[in-house]
Length: 285
Ligand code: C2E
Ligand code: CA
Ligand code: CA
Image (cartoon, rainbow, N blue to C red):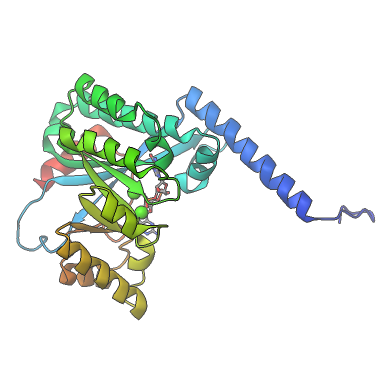
């Protein structure tokens, strides 16, 4: 109703038009953000499970997560909102390359940080993987910024977009030869977990947080997490569990022998200064 007796029909066509307008807006927002350098890097620390009381120290691992700064509201927008429009408009490649350049630049400028960190994880969209020059580009940036390749781990999400397994395998092999690592993100929830596991050389499995979050109260989720952990053990691949939000879940995962936990129970993603990050990395050693 438009008031004063006016009436507007809300039809499927209107809904489609609105959705269309919304995605077109996203395209403009993202293009602007790329031009005006409005992306920011957040880091979320991983937590070594089962080592906490023994006094054994493990070099700090962090996952880099992109944020979009909106000058109108002065708020940071979560990638949950803009990654899929970015993929649709073929802007994700540029965003991923921006993150890569920014993180490697940061590491290159701060040798003390680089020396004390254990691993930095970057997310790569399957669509970015399709770009033929990406592996060479990564290698070039590593050399230019003098970053140890074994510091980098790339998380790939299993989406329908990994259409060309041969290409993905070549990309991974090129960077693995240099020393970079690969992790299968959202394991268990994707389109073809087993195919990717069989066909692509992953170093680590990251169990999808939707199984982990409530595994203490949901028996079937717990069964699935246990099976994934068993399988990873048989495949001799370390496991990261994300969305660890409570202490009982953290304890359960440690009992299962999961190597790393990540989630609000341990650490939030943060906009850290280099000094803060370096200090945290020093303390973890
Ligand atoms: P993801 O890679 O699975 O990242 C985990 C997401 O869960 C992050 O959301 C993180 O903030 C959130 N999270 C962390 N701990 C917890 C927890 O304990 N509970 C819950 N409920 N959530 C938690 P974020 O940063 O909004 O990222 C969303 C997704 O966007 C990421 O999911 C990733 O797929 C994508 N993404 C983020 N950065 C990049 C990037 O640079 N490139 C690409 N291609 N994708 C990215
Ligand atoms: Ca991830
Ligand atoms: Ca994930």
